Image (cartoon, rainbow, N blue to C red; front, side):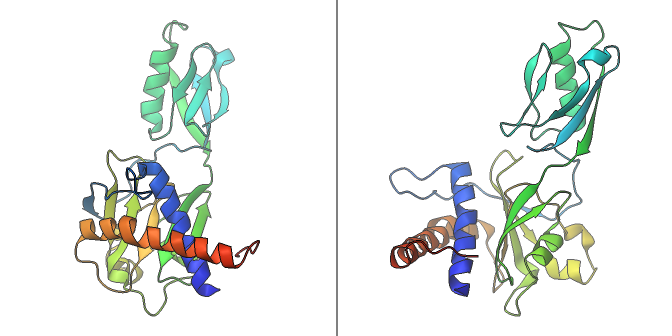
Length: 243
């Protein structure tokens, strides 16, 4: 059953990424995406996500002010102006867009935007961890916290070469190599990258030398194999649910 749970966790993460990038034509799996390799860096400014709750306060018109959610489609709804895209923006960027959207309706569309509640953010942790699968957090989640939430590292893990595959908030799919060993030893805490929704954290058994080759293998070999394994398991065990 442990093997099945690991396969299911990996396949679930793969389905999220495949849906984000689209399937390869005529193959049913994604072709290798372009990849950018980056070292772990200090967390950037917070970018809004679906499920966040915001206070939008117009400086000269209290009637237009109020608390609004960032919808699953990634927008906030304003009186008169309608929907404005919010996901992926900082509060400053959203405030600028709101000012532009409300300019036809208010003499002074000055506005302050505040995050009052952060939505639940899902990521996936797979590979050499105790409990691979989906991890959720209502606040900022770093690589080390995500791995801890997945039960921690197995003895077979190679923490110096943890990979983070990201599709959201970037111009193109991006792979980050994280030296988690340096984070855990407190030698380089800047490596502890803050995750964004649907990031996949992969803990390998051995050091990954080429990031591009890893992502190509991940999408074209690992994910299809796990989906095939799960399909075979479902055929042999109809109605069974994994925990």
